[in-house]
Length: 489
Ligand code: ADP
Image 1 (cartoon, rainbow, N blue to C red):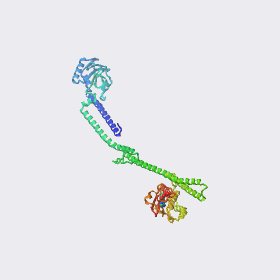
Image 2: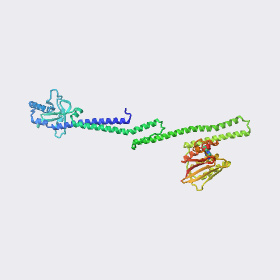
Image 3: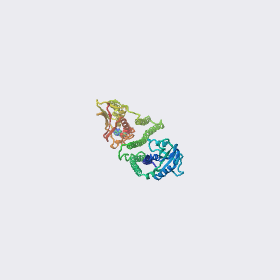
């Protein structure tokens, strides 16, 4: 029933206002009664004294019956709500003005009487009601005689108008009715205003809750169609909650997308890896089995030929496994670049030297354009060497005889631009965006020994250095790979 926050708040507010209303009515009843009693007792304070001083009610301890009767009669006519009791000095009731059987007490307490007789006492003072053992009433009292030793008391109960219920009291007083009406009206207005306000405040919470629900239904994969705090901004806790939720959903959606992509990539990778491992492995196995089967029947030349092919396949297999392992290590952050300042010119010269023989074999001109005053750069020397090797290996692989490969280093503000350019077969423009993907190989190119991981490794290494690599190419004209590294400070 009270599932929504609004319903709960409304119920609490209603309960609170009812409580305030009841409290107000009870308080009014109590204070009004006290006020009436105070006024009544103050007005009639000297009534008993007046009666005692004007009439001789007792002489030497005996009641003056005739005088008493006259007084009873007179007061009954003037004010029937007044009750008169004649008490002895200990408070015992000697005579009264009520019909027989009405009086329930034998005596009344003297303590309130003494308090009343003290002129400084604050009124109202309530004394025992002889007609009801459980009730107290206002009174006027006077010792008999007024001065001298006390023989008894004239005890006058000033019943006046008394209200037993709220309704009775309201009926009796126009002012009370009016003020109660005003208070109830005020409470109702405040309740209404409170409900409207709560509705306004909880509306944003309701919207937030329904957006969260919708996001949950979408399996946490769909971004929020509408920002939680699109309508109105208050900068309060609800807005902050909405903002945090927005950021959270963005993050979750991003992570989910990444997770899905990674999962798809992993599947593809496993498929590619198994395919790429199976092919050379099957060939290797085939050649070795043939060697075993035809043992003795093969000429030494054929024998050597078979062994050479098998070795080539096993080399390819080994390279593939080590490349995969290298990439996995780079991905898992196991390999962290050990950044240090070093001379890039020297590194380039070393790498060029390493490939010189292979280049000469293919009659390719491999050269480095270096500047003597190039500053040191900050990077992991081993990993950058790997990048250069991969790029030169590719250039050598895809450049025909009599071509040229040029490595150029250019200082560009606080970075050094490194370019590896060749005059090879080039890469079709539409394939350029994919060549850095794992296992990607350009269809038209002759099948090489590579597994399509060289550029992916280079890209990952540069990513770990906070850099990137770009490729530009013109088919049958050549390709250029460019990346930047920071100058050491
Ligand atoms: P692979 O080991 O097959 O060379 P890479 O990741 O190094 O794998 O390169 C991906 C693909 O990009 C290659 O298969 C090749 O088709 C193309 N490629 C890379 N470098 C060059 C280049 N210098 N010239 C032409 N094509 C290239």
